[in-house]
Length: 443
Image (tube, rainbow, N blue to C red; front, top):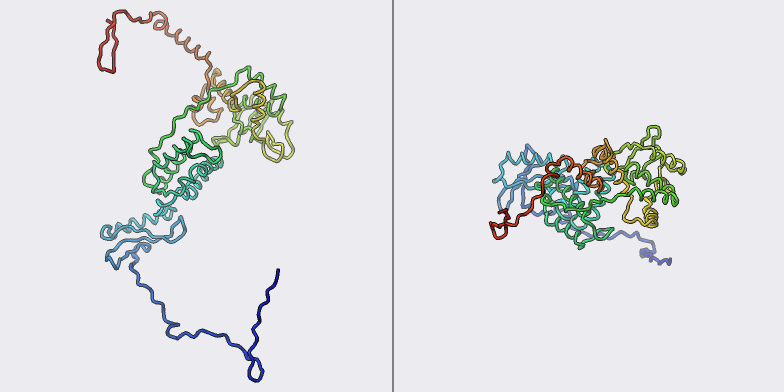
């Protein structure tokens, strides 16, 4: 780096050659102008605090000559001083002004601002909705909630004020995602089920804003969820299970044991993979599932086949890893081996099968077992209601349906077996009631 020389001022010399001390030059300002006070512009408004409520001010407009009530406060949203106009003094008397001011002060003490309606949806989610969910819900629920809002709502409706949020905007957002005009952050075009999750999120946020006092009316009450037909009724047959288990064991023993536990317990694959060694109780024949979809831990009873698979897994543990299905490296659990599983199925000529279909097999077998029923199968599946178990997991075979029809025929022989079917006689006449409706009666 090159250094630039700095010029040094030479000292002044007196006539006899002595150096004279230099005095800094100063700007000479007259005394009157230097100390004269700055004239402030007269304020248009004059305010007086109310003696019974100090934050309440009676403000007078010196130009229009009308008075109004004003509340000064510290905004809990921005932590800055702010004000809120209540009404004109001729429209709001002193008593009502004090009542309204004290009500607003109580809301401020609880963290609600009079300017809450102007709060954006993103600020409301970050400061109110997400902290409340973190207090009441599980960590996984909060992560899903934040991810859904950040991926599908924040960019389009995050800067919209709560007071200006309308059902038309939310419905248009759902239609854009459904038609493909807007795409998701990770998967591109999203399906109807994900669109329903976005609609449910918006309805939840608006309902929470009404409950917390930020909104008076719910703008999302007119939104309706889309009708879905995504119930999957695919299960593994006995022949497929008999062929899959030996093929999996020949490729990967741990994968075969995982599929065995899925069939034997009906648990989700994520619940089994996240299980730890200390969650297994071979004496009590139970497995504690800590991380479930519902957020409620569950103690799963183990059958003989499940206990045998767990004993075999104990001989395959890795030092330093406490999971029942340890990863090849690190301290976490193994990832779902979907690619290896699909390769085995492809070699066997089996298509359109997933890990979750094994859960459907277990729940269906349990529901149709003698003395079990849907309620016990729903408890085993850790479902919130039996409706989910009945509509999405219990698969009834065609033979059972034929057996049900035969049971009806045996129970009602007089009506179904002995009476001859009604045949239409040749002499028929039509009676026209309207141009679009015709009744056919026997003549």
